[in-house]
Image (tube, rainbow, N blue to C red; front, top):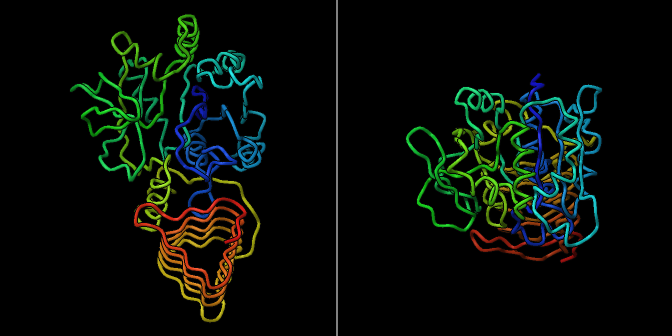
Length: 370
């Protein structure tokens, strides 16, 4: 067990262009892959790397996140020697809630001060990947870096937005752009940072004293010349999920067996909140192909190239193609869905036809009747 690395999942001002998918939830709790939430990937990577103490810095709309994470039991973080803390803002003052992540770290500095670990890994939740942080920490120590940033060489982000970075020949980061910059590089930051805990606390204090309260944009990007900031090049699957297009395209990528194996099982399994439900039921006349269909679903119609979450009912004669139907959705008789995203508890009345554009799907928010 890696007792020298403290985990932080930072949800303060996380990039979010997911429209109605985040109308009543934060991006971290957006359902993904028929039974998971986006936060599961960062959290499972930490657990598989032996990290026993994790803090989730919540920001806004975190009720469903807290319900999903609970005590951390499903990630084996509920024992005496392990822990999962969800740390919402300590105030309801709108001006303070809008401040940057360094301010919220400062408000919860007791959490850092009381932890025995020497190093901290800070991640976001919108990076869908499976990372071995042991390897990252090992390289971090060997190179003598002040900060190590997990990066990936990837030109096509499937509609997602991410910071690009510029590297020198030795792997040192010499430039970082914001999400909408024009830096000419094929290397993207995965928003995962390893550093000594005392350096993080120094960045918190010195930056706030200068009126700066954003970790990456101000504390790191503003000190690239004086800090030894290095890259760790990740080689597994990466999905940047912070727009509707990227959510849709990365979801359908899961239908590729090589992507599924790489993301969910290498280097370790992805865990999520367990719900005891019966297996999916396929009725007489049901037809399915190239789809993920979760437990508790009832399939009477046709499902092709789609992702079906728990408890969905596809009625007789209905056709669902290239679509994502979240938990407890009901697709009425003889409906046709093509390139559609339906949030939880959406009901489609019989004989309706919904079609989206090729990369911009039709999106329906929670609990709608269409």
